[in-house]
Image 1 (cartoon, rainbow, N blue to C red):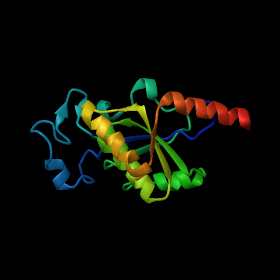
Image 2: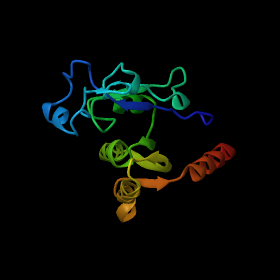
Image 3: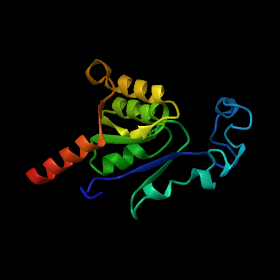
Length: 166
C-alpha cells in the first residue's frame, strides 16, 4: 500500500443456494466438511457467512477491490483480468492460502494470461508444510515455468530500491 501498488483481495465462496458450485465440487471432501455444510463460522465457503470474510489484520482498505471467486483460481469466472488491465498491471505478486491450491492456481491462470507472476513464499501458507514447499518449487521449476518465488524481505527491498530510483 505504501508503495502505491494496487492491492486486490480474493476469497473463494459460493452463493447461499450453491447455484454457482458444480455438483462434483459440492460432493468432494469429508462428510460434514463439504461446501455448504455448517461449520464453526457459518456454512463452509458460503458468501456472507462469517467464515467467508477476510481476516481483520488483512482487511481491505477503502477502495481496494475484493474478488469473490467460485473456484480455486482468482481468474475463474471473475473480473480480475479486467481489473488488472484497467489498472495497467502486468506483474502479480501473489500471497495467501493455500499455497498449493488457490495461490498456485491463480499463478498458473495469470501466467496463461501473460502476467509475470511472483509468489511471496513467506506470505503464503498451507495446512501441510510439504505441500507449501512443493507448491513453491513447482512455480519456479525450470527457471520459472509458472513464475518466480521471492520472500517478503526481498520484495520490500526491491520496492524501496524502485522508489529510491524514481
